[in-house]
Image (cartoon, rainbow, N blue to C red; front, side, top):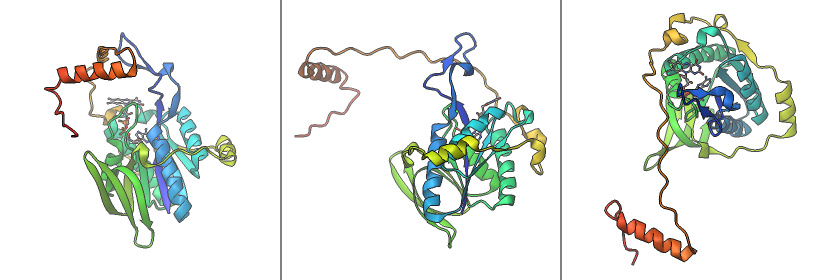
Length: 274
Ligand SMILES: Cc1cc2nc3c(=O)[nH]c(=O)nc-3n(C[C@H](O)[C@H](O)[C@H](O)COP(=O)(O)OP(=O)(O)OC[C@H]3O[C@@H](n4cnc5c(N)ncnc54)[C@H](O)[C@@H]3O)c2cc1C
């Protein structure tokens, strides 16, 4: 079983500041971290490998310092990691990102055939959720999005049983392998990394590929040149105005809350529990 997890380095959006003049992210204002959804994706690969055995590779596209997220993935339990890094990839939108990553995945699968690709549901900075399905489309494999449980992997039949989250329920899906999953955070809990993993991660040197290391690449589909997306405008949404503050004892606050709800009762359907 060979699982490849796509991992992205992102600024920590809990801390990052927005430049009020340009309305763009001030990337220097926040540390770069492994996209949290991708940490869960790596953890899920580890969980699957515990049952099936095999190899976990991770793949990232980014500047040289993105090796940090590959090392972090090794700390969680990945066996090896690839970074594709080249000026030609710069300025990529989701179309060009999925193209570059799919070319790297083709090269990885020549070294060791891939059974499953796992991505995060979305990256916390770009937040489109398009890259995973984009890769699946380019590699012509089934995408299964919003995965909350990998229920069963049948290596002999080359199938996987998966639970997906829908807006108003759940769906159990059987997919053939190879396939691509995008995972929700609730799929697992990130475990503390054991000390040997930390030591391996500190010593690990990721494999770095430039465009010329990939095969059959159409350079016009890479980076800014291959990115039809145009950002029309960036702006900071106005802060929501604070609501009414409740005070007094807990009973008084419940009373005040009931008054507010009754005032707004046109907006709610109040159902009696009697
Ligand atoms: C015109 C334009 C120019 C841009 N220029 C730049 C730029 O110069 N530098 C820049 O950083 N961003 C740039 N971006 C943003 C860039 O498009 C997105 O960061 C990127 O395409 C991923 O999209 P997303 O963040 O929405 O990922 P999502 O689709 O939300 O991510 C889903 C999952 O896909 C995988 N994934 C996504 N990106 C990567 C990656 N790089 N490596 C490995 N796995 C990944 C992860 O598993 C992730 O959880 C640009 C965007 C536009 C529109």
